[in-house]
Each structure stands twice: as C-alpha cells, then as structure tokens.
Amino acid sequence: MLKKVDIAACMLASVMFVLLFINHFMFKAEARIGAKTGLTAKEALGANYMILCLLTLVLLILVCLKGRNENGNALTGGISAVCGGLSVLFAGQAVNVVELSSAGGRVSMSIGVYLYFALAYLLLMKCSEHVKTRWKQVLIFIAAPVIILLSWKSGQLDGLSIMKEYASNQEDFHIYLTNHISMSFRVVCMGTLVGIPLGWFVYKHAKAGRFILTFLNTIESIPSLALICVMMFPLAFLSNTFPVLKRYGIAGVGAAPVFCALFCYALFHIVNSMYGALKVVDKQYIDTARGMGMTELQIFTKVELPLILPVLISGIRVSLIASILGVTIGSYIGYGALGKFILQGLNGFAIDVVMLGTLPIMGLVFFFDFVLRQCKDLVELYRKSKGRVKL
Figure 1 (tube, rainbow, N blue to C red):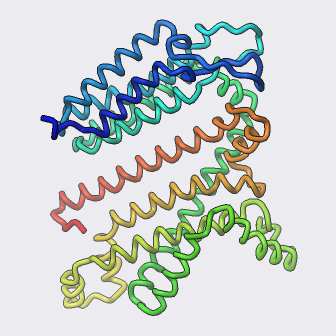
Figure 2: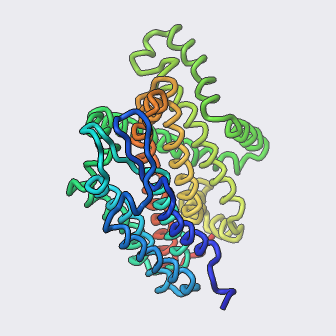
Figure 3: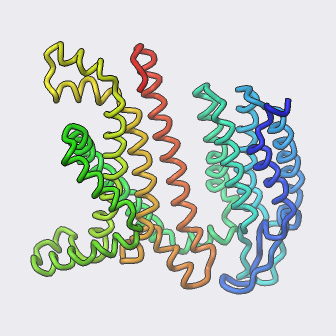
C-alpha cells in the first residue's frame, strides 16, 4: 500500500494545509505604500476559512488514497484546481471581512495565497500525469481559471489592491500586454521559419552543422540581459550610420535588441529539437522513400517532418515560454512590455504593481504551455489513429 502513495503529491497537499495557518496569508496596509500587517487565513477569510480548510483536508486525504487510479487522480486534480480558484475568490471577498482604519487602506494577497495557488497548480499537474482521458484533463486545467475569471467579471476581486492598481493603469496594461504577446510570437514565428530549414541543414552537413550548433550553444550560455545589452551596440551603430533604418524601428534601444537576442534563443531551441529528432528517425523509412524515387526535399516534407512533428512542437513550446519570460527583461532597455510594471513596482516599493506585471506573465506561460502540450498530444493521437509510428 505504501508503494502506491504519491509522496510528492502528499507533501504538496500538506504544505497547502499548513499555509492556512501562517501569519502572512494576506496582508493589509493603511495606504498604498507603507507598513503592512500580516493576516492569517482565519483573520482574512472569515466564514470562507472553514470551507477552504475542509476542501484542503479532503484534498490531503484523497492524495493519500488515489494511487495511480485515473478517476482518483482526476477527482484529486479537480479538487486541487477548485481549491486554487477559491483561494483567489475568497481573497477577493476578504475586503468585506478585514477592517481598515482609512478609506485609502488596502487589502492584498500575500505569500500565503500565492504559494497556496502555486502548490495547487503543481498538484493538479502531478495528478494529470495519470489522467489519460482528454476531457478530464481539460476539465482539470480550466477549473481554476474559470473560477477566477467569473470572480473577476462579477466584481468579487475589485476590492483587492492589485485590482485597484489595474484600474488606475488599465490603458498602459493593455498596451504592455499586447506588446508582450506580439514580441513573443514574432520571435517564435521567425525562429520557426528559420530554425526548421536550418535544423535540416545542420543534420545534413556535419562539418557546418557542428559550427552552427557550437555557436548557438554559446549564445544560449549568455544571460538574457547581457545578450540584449550586447545587441544594443551593433544596432545603435547601424541606425546611426544608416538613419533610414530608424523608420523601421531598428535602434540601439527598444524592440530591436530584444527581438534579436530572443530570436537567437528561439533558434537554439528549435534547431536543437530538429537536429536531435532527425538523428533518431529510423533509417528504414528514409531508404524506403529513396527507393520510391523521392527527392531529399520530398523525403523531408513527406517522411521526416511528419515523424518529428511532436518533437518540433515541444521545441516551439520551450521557445515560446522562454520568449515570454525573456521579453520581461526588455523593459530594462526601454521596451514597453509587462516588465515595466515590475520595474515601477520595485522602484516604488509597491508589491501589487510588481504582481500586476508578474501574474499575467505567469498566466501566459501556463496557458501556452498547456495549449502546446495539448497540440502535441493531439498530433500523437492523430498519428496513432492512422496507424503511424511514434518517434
């Protein structure tokens, strides 16, 4: 029986339960910037505290009993998602419970709420490993976002300090969010268009391929901020030498150095995925294709690419996540993305402004990670239905 207990999941659920008793589950402040007073979950949540406690206790019991059973894991993952969603909803309703001495007082989520939600997400991810039914997986993953979205739309979260920051920075937030997503997708799309043929070239030409892989590995080893700063100098020189380039946004600061640096990282992930996948393709399929009279290009597009598509999607997924995180650093050199809020919050000692930039970035990472994982699984499912081999 003990062998079937998921120790990691039990630890996650146990820490979630302990978090309901720590002092900094939430905090209150008499002004936007100033001294903050930590609150336990019991002090902040009021009557909702017992609901969250009971659900977390049920979750802890289920984690100890679920084993590898699919239905047990689906139920445990679902309750974990509900706990995560309710922790945010109840935090929003805490403004009706916590007493503030001034109209400018703030109630905010503290380390307890954020850590509780993060552990709930990790736990549902752990449970989803044993859930193979597609609709059950989707239901588990969307439960928490749906609860949070409905809470936000119904105004249940409006009293939180972070929502007040959002209301006062709404226009900038939408601009920064659009810029953040736009830059991430431009980087990955261009990286994919260049990386696929480049990965094929690296595989077909060993000597040149070794040089290209060494170069990309060297680029990958450079920290993001350092690489962006390195890109500033040649771009500044080019824009000053050829002023016409400034019309197209090429300059030493702003979008251009961010794009160039992240494009190099995207190439690394996609080229390495292509090269590694092509190396393990069974040569029998290639020989059969050649025997049928196919050209090298036809072999790649009709045999190799369909075989390595799931691996390629995984490379694109890693590239997109890295780009979303990397764009954040671009704010240090003037690019208007969500990292701007992080810098503003750090400079002004306003934690909620920092979280106004951080939470959407993490949301984008989780969302696109989930979507591209599902795309990869759907490709595998389609190949299986057609009786095709799995790489």
